[in-house]
Amino acid sequence: MWQWFSLLVLATIMVSACSSTVVERSKMPTPCRVVQHVRGETCIPLHPQRIVAMSYNSLADILALNSKPVAAFIDGGYEAFDYLADKTDGVEMMYGSQPNLERIVLLKPDLIIVVSDGAFQGIYNQLSQIAPTVVLPWMETIGDWKQHLQDVAGVLEKTKLATQLLDDYDRRIQHLKQALSIKSAADQKGAASSKENRQQPIQISFASVMRGQLYYDGKDFADRILDELGLLAPRSVTSGILSEETLPEIDGDILFIATYTENDRSLLEQLQQRPLWSQVKAVQQNQVYLVNLNLWHGYNILAAHAVLDEIEKYLVNTP
Image (cartoon, rainbow, N blue to C red; front, side, top):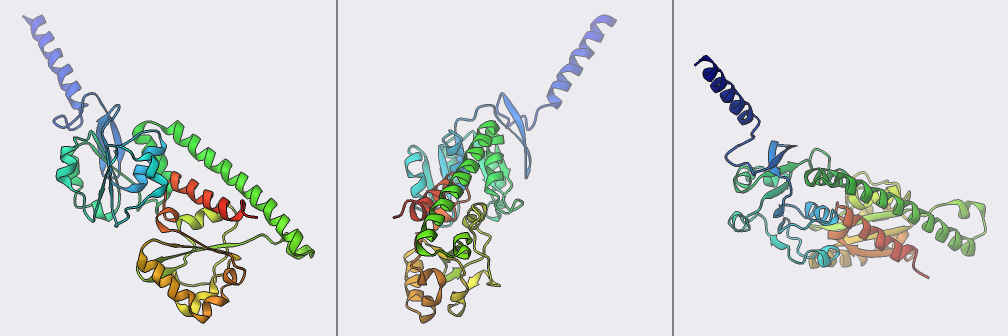
């Protein structure tokens, strides 16, 4: 009897030990692995097949990592992502100010990826009731798009591929720097013979028109790319918002200026009619290029390459 009692106690202990390792047993996919994230820890499927991305940057990074979500929620009214268009076939795109939770339920996701944006603070609990939900840092990293790629890769167990993607990006930065240096040297050789002119690198400014304002803050996604290329013009503007009077303070030899809506373009056209517009250095040199805001504010690996494509198009592959 004592032997049987001992065996019963041992079996009970083993069952209890196994149960103690289960995270949220009632909701946990089987099998699963525990992922640490901003809101704690979540047990997610070993190989998630029905992912819902709750931001366009997460969507882009998932695609770049050779996965495809079943759906993505796009906040802020952006509805035209040309640089993603050929990659989102089969992905249900949901637009609006708030995600349609009923629709997400019907999609039967096995993983939801959210960023730590204030817009999702109030619905995290609802999302986590629909499917395992991870909240990746965004506000905490100040929109560090490279870190976000690595965070998404960690969830999908594709960290090696993320490292390869970032290495490829760094190599492209170096190649483009070389191409721009060669092009700049050739242009300056034909334009001027002084030693000072030959050694002076080009400087590029980036500005954007949004919500009735012209922004020029030097810290945006595109600014960081220009800085990596060694081409970002120094700022003399003390505020991120430019007025008509401060237009001449855009210092770059070249200006990329981004718009998105018709109202944005209308405001830019109005600015271009102002007398002070002609005092902008890049305007005087006929080096102003209009680009798309949702691309140059992309904050993801695919947008970064698309920005480099446009820089190469306008500054390297031109006569």
